[in-house]
Image (tube, rainbow over all chains, first blue to last red; front, top):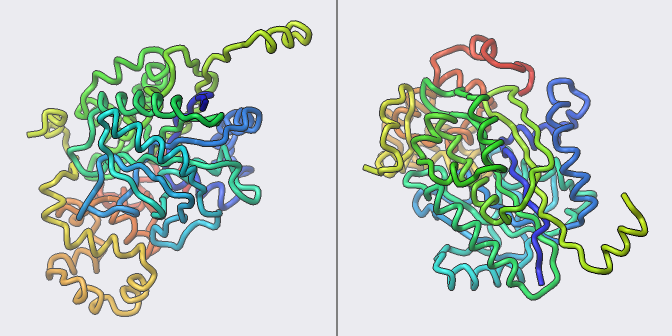
Amino acid sequence: MAKILGGIGTSHVPTIGGAYDRNKQNDPDWTPLFRGYEPVKSWLEHKKPDVLVFFYNDHATTFFFDHYPTFALGVGVEYAIADEGLGPRAVPPLKGHAGLARHMADALVNDEFDLSVFQDLPIDHGVHSPLTMFWPPSPDWPGKIVPIEINVLQHPIPTPARCWKLGQAVRRAVLSYPEDLKVVIVGTGGLSHQMNGERAGFNNEKWDQKFLDLIARDPKKLVAMRHADYIRLGGTEGAEEIMWLAMRGALSPRAKKIHQNYYLPMTTAMAVALFEEPVRKGRASRKASARNPA
Amino acid sequence: MNPQLKGVEKLEGTYLFDLAASAKALRLNRFLHGFTVPINRALFKGDPEAAFDKAGLSAEERRMVRELDWAALMRYGASFFCLEKLGRVKGVSNPEMVAGFRGESLKEFLKTRNVPGAR
């Protein structure tokens, strides 16, 4: 059966991918960002997941406001890198795990999450801007993804509580997949930023730190908040944090935050947090660890 | 009114993109979204007026796009994420657009940032 190894919450501002593409790891303005992703990259290299399930938002790239999906699940085998106005980034197309995705579509719709599904659409920086930091292609991607788009652009957007429940339903869907897959759940977006009006450039480091604490320790507090609270505390685009709630909802209550990084250089607070599920030790592995104490 | 958003109206300098804004600026946003396709970028770069004609933009919409009047575009109902595509085509960075929303120069805006070089 498929199992969930842990989760990652991460910002997805395009400059993260831009810093990677321009090889900025030794530029002092960007080093703190690269360093912050190193433990996540190492963890993934060690755990070797087969699939990353992404809760992310499109940026009026793949979808337009003539029909903007509230939730859309990608069920394709390949997703091109979207052209956002400058031509696509020079990274390979994303690989989709169609088997898991189709199963998730069945499971979610039967669990009363009637989301829309898409096949071979291009995907924008909401997924791949942070992805290259912790799962870089060398030369191809280390594994496959299942993308779940959430509308955070055009109000009404789904409530924090609904995103949490979607995460829980995704957990049930993944854990009921018969193949032995190792899965990690990713939620992208945030933290505090606002990209409109005279309030543009708004940040709130105090709130960001509180969010990073609550998402691990007491996510129900975040679930109970309204969008107006998120917007007041973290800016209009801070509302993207609901995608972290979907990720956290897909983890067990016993998942532990084992790493985080926070960097606020310009207009968007760039954060990453890594969550690990407790490893259930079988008899064999207990014996092995007794022989080889860490 | 959307109960999730009650109280947002008290925040100054904040323009929520909702269904009313989306409907008002649908033609403009569709034009901006079109910059995800190279042929539309080429037409706009080579002959902006022809691109405006093709999209059927109004005189006001043309003026705002022509002058890159970011603050007016935002107030009109343009989605930031569609404006971002115009920014890429015109070589305008996000910090410069944000400065425009705030009514500041890029230089003034960068003074308010922790790491002004991180662009």
